[in-house]
Amino acid sequence: MPHTISFIGGGNMARSLIGGLIARGRDPKRMVVADPMQAQLDSLHQQFGVRGTTNNLEAATGADVIVLAVKPQEMRNVTTSLLPALKNRPLIISVAAGIRAADIHRWSDGAPIVRCMPNRPALQGCGMTGLFATTDVSPEHRRVAAELLSAVGRTIWVEQEAQMDIVTAVSGSGPAYFFLLIEMLETAGIQLGLPPDVSRQLAVETAYGSGRMAQESPESPAVLRQQVTSKGGTTDAALRVLEAENVRAIFAAAIAAAARRSAELADEFGGTDKT
Ligand SMILES: NC(=O)C1=CN([C@@H]2O[C@H](COP(=O)(O)OP(=O)(O)OC[C@H]3O[C@@H](n4cnc5c(N)ncnc54)[C@H](OP(=O)(O)O)[C@@H]3O)[C@@H](O)[C@H]2O)C=CC1
Ligand SMILES: O=C(O)[C@@H]1CCC=N1
Image 1 (tube, helix red, strand yellow):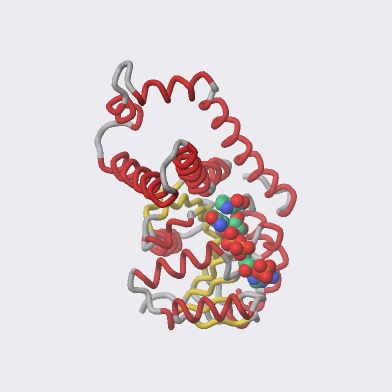
Image 2: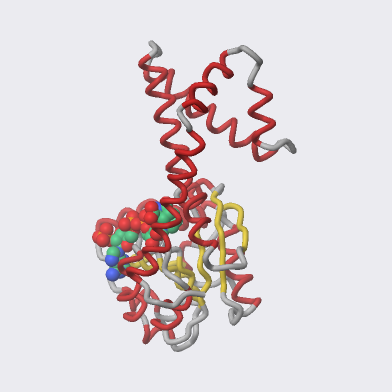
């Protein structure tokens, strides 16, 4: 019998996971979602047929797996409010940025915790999720968490919890960097004289094709880039501008800022535990 899953928080990330799981055959009747906004619950019900409630405790009671999909700021209150539902030791999966396993473990009175950092393309079944669990989490619970997230894309375990901050910066936030690049390509195309719909299509399909090629090709992204870049040609002209403007340093600083912010969120809204 597949697990019953309770989502606490029905926002963007929960929507991506619920939609991705249902599209890949999970039974919406074995899921429930809790959110304070009735409109949010109605929209999830309409789109995916999943039951909603504004009562977190009701949603969590009897679930085998509880996915905490609220903002890091809410994690402490939400977890402690679920305590009566945690007596049967359901698995807690946290997708919250930053918040450390030891803090959730403490707030939940010792529940097994797997931290997951998925990303929004989970909705399309092509998400990327980094997972981390402390050594006391059983192989069975690790398997359940990995299986759940594998249903909506690829998964990878990290060994050190601090690496989850870096996963968050690279792949959790990562879709936003690619969307920004798509926006910038689209805008540049329009400014140079293309109709907006033509420019949008060129930008989106180029991003899709490049991602697929990077995924499927045995070559590294650096080699694939070189294969597009004819000496003295158009790509070379563009890349020279990007390198001269220090695009690599800009991206390195941006991603470091995201990783730093993840660690800060843990300190601000978690506690002092560091593992
Ligand atoms: N968005 C993304 O791409 C990713 C997000 N994450 C993580 O997922 C978590 C959720 O992010 P995201 O989905 O973007 O945020 P959203 O704000 O879209 O979703 C959070 C939802 O939780 C609801 N909520 C607020 N308080 C409570 C409460 N006490 N009990 C139940 N539900 C509550 C919010 O309602 P209301 O709006 O009314 O406050 C909102 O609908 C975060 O911790 C984030 O770090 C991880 C990976 C990627
Ligand atoms: O921006 C955020 O904090 C969340 C975590 C990763 C993606 N969105």
